[in-house]
Image (cartoon, rainbow, N blue to C red; front, side, top):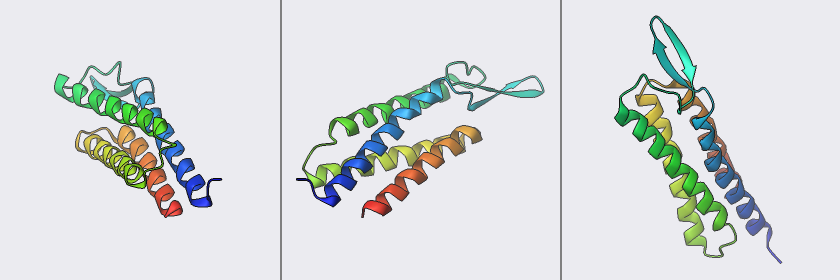
Length: 130
């Protein structure tokens, strides 16, 4: 039978994986600011055109990387190696922190705030389990 720690750790992995996969919502939710004349409109990442192509590529790469890591986290949820699970958690936190940093550096406050909330949830989950 699984211990209480294993159950909490499995639940933490489930939450991390689902939060990472939910970053795909960036593709469809209007979280990005796009200047249209004097007005700034909120658009989804797929509809974002008012930025340099390399920035959109960075955004898409980050979103895909976090989502793939979330799928990997869910796939490795029942893994019994603690070191591997610990490293999966650290990479997930680092990817989210990198996302917050990227969206803050590029002036995308809504995207940064949404990613920051996900990062806070992950940090609180790790504090609860440890």
